[in-house]
Image 1: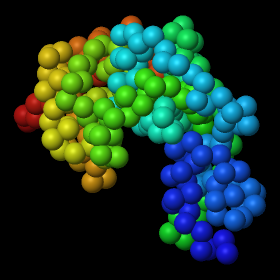
Image 2: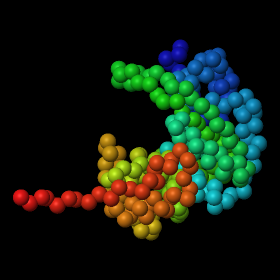
Image 3: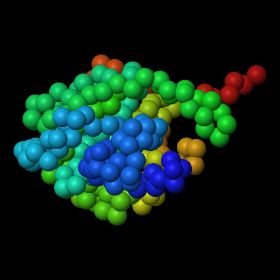
Length: 267
């Protein structure tokens, strides 16, 4: 019986707001079967109290600070889950990035956006016959709000995340993008754009150019990535985001090593 259940449909309906009990009744199985499948698929579970209140949150007052935060998070690995009428923002990072989650939490709290923070212990998985172990992680999820339903339509107009063309980057949104999905080395600064289309990446490059930084599009493990090599522009970029840095990412804004080609020695 378990193998015949349409698990993709179950997961989709749960993420849209149906309860475990409703799904169990719909598919004529017990609630534990539904719960086990959701846990196995790493789907965050709603508490009973949260489930009973999911439709009671009215829209929060939109602000530039929250909008910039949301844009920056969604340029990285954050997502928006659609409920029946409203939606929620979510993000999961490794434990070492917890300071950034605390920063996000402080901003949301200051603007009266309800949310919860949970922790996931390392888990063993077998992928293509290879045993892997995930890292301990931290997850932040907001409550369901109409605001995020609007953002869902903006970022997922046909169900797949894209870069909305009304996006206006700011130092704050770039910083949160960089904290969540960027890296630095002595050779370059990178902003990862996994799963975005090339035309989305080209649009982002043009937006970043307005800040005096000329990123180029390259590939990393077959995924598009934006790379910045110019020494002075790397310094300019890090100066741009430095005021917003949480303590856990201080290493991401260290002054870059200036890389110059040495001249050959003549004998």
